[in-house]
Image (cartoon, rainbow over all chains, first blue to last red; front, side):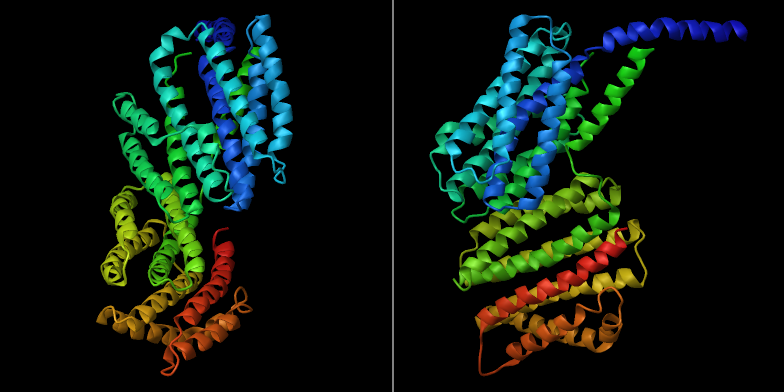
Length: 258
Length: 259
């Protein structure tokens, strides 16, 4: 019995440092935070336009607060997991500076210069995407997980595009700034194609989710193209689509092998 | 040793930030409230659609229908995302499938003549939601006087919307069933007031709000029963005002029962 006890203790002593080394930069955790920040850029702008047009303003402001805090958390985590590469570190510093300015601008609902906020959001989103592509492709576990990343990319693109659809709609119908459609360049066909590709992925547990998202997308498109102005209904339908998409996103993140 | 705690911290922290993506976990009573609200909003939607078709109180009705549709959608989404009980899931999936076809029909209903057929579907939809909320009573084990009072208030909210639809539909000579519904529902509210007024007036939670409802109802009833003056615009405005007062009562019960 004593021998067994000491064997177990010795096993734990030697396995923990090995486990710790492997888990110091798990690709799953890094990917989750990088992708989250990339998706949050459009979400900030969506919340900004919805709050400005008084659509469920209290809920929207609460979501904006949570989203800003999440972006901050993720930036802190990512900063602790940068590779030893001067260029990457410089790019990250620039992103952080950009973020600090953006963070103050997005909560200023009196801001009349929409173009500035749209351009800053697009820039933030692009920088986050570049950071994600660089940090993940350089991770030692990237090649082992290439297939899952392909499907994660479809989900992330959909989440970003659905927020973009809301942004377009509100700018066009509520805030009367229709030039924005050219800036955001989003269409429903990309979202549909991504859903079709996801439907073919055998490792997704909940198949009904894809069907639900497809139905939800039909309803979103109907509202978007309808002559009647229904911003609350559009927000409600897109919220459902996003929540289902996020559930799927976390399911796929869970499939990444650390 | 230090690394093990660091890893534990990050895993725990991840848990918090993952959960931060979504709303806090929802109580069963809230899901029941969502279902009963849906029954009110589906009738509100019917009223708004009819008024929009006839170009009466159009701006107000358009804003309200957007709100009603969004709330039906939101509430169903919340129930769908939170509920895993197999018995309730059957109801939820049936309602979701129905919503897809209903959405198309709602958009295609352009005339008062089409409205009768739409209202038939609205009542099917209403029945599906009502069957789900009945099932929730059993699954969530909801009973007692306060639950019954809360259900009574939600029922009143629904009746007010149904009366508004059937009054105007009857005025437009759409279908004889609207006349029958109208009389039935007015009688239900009168019976409720006769039997339960004292209970609500003396209730410590809602007693202060109930007199406003009685006042509003008496004014609405006078307008509904007037042979000389037929004023659907007044009926619409009153339905909004009464719902506001009833919702105050409902919210007061909700705050107590959701603890």
